[in-house]
Length: 186
Image 1: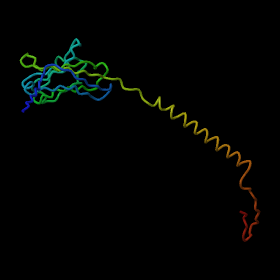
Image 2 (image 1 turned 90 degrees about the vertical axis):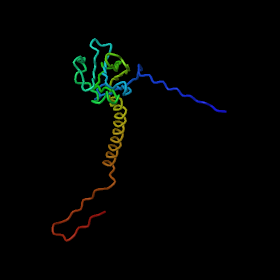
Image 3 (image 1 turned 60 degrees about the horizontal axis):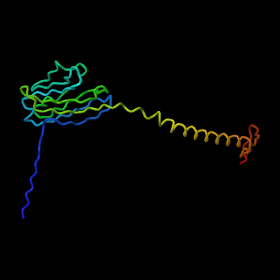
């Protein structure tokens, strides 16, 4: 008896979504967009945020970036690899992401006006967590102050006891100048 197993793999380059998270104030974040080289070759890629009035974030043509229509909020903050359209790696680097940058970014590949691929990437920019020291400091400082107080009290009481009940009695030994030796009690 023979068993025939058929595997079908469907590749769809059209539309899918992924997500990226970054903390507000990081140096940069990369918004991925990968397509087959056959799709990107001889094409143009447009990275955009469709909810903005001026939606263009970055445009990459075969030999150069075209940033004439770029939204001003992204000026000097975006970049793509020079060989992006030759490799199919159309990832966009966004420098200094802020909370207001959090949104869905679309990666559209076009050739002669025809849309070949559309990929959405959700960028989530989270607020930087508050510093931990305001929470940790009291938890560490209060026990340290208590411990120092206890040690201080113990040493003070020992000092007071030693002052009133000295362990060693002080004896005064008188010697005259010119004596050959003096015996000191112990």
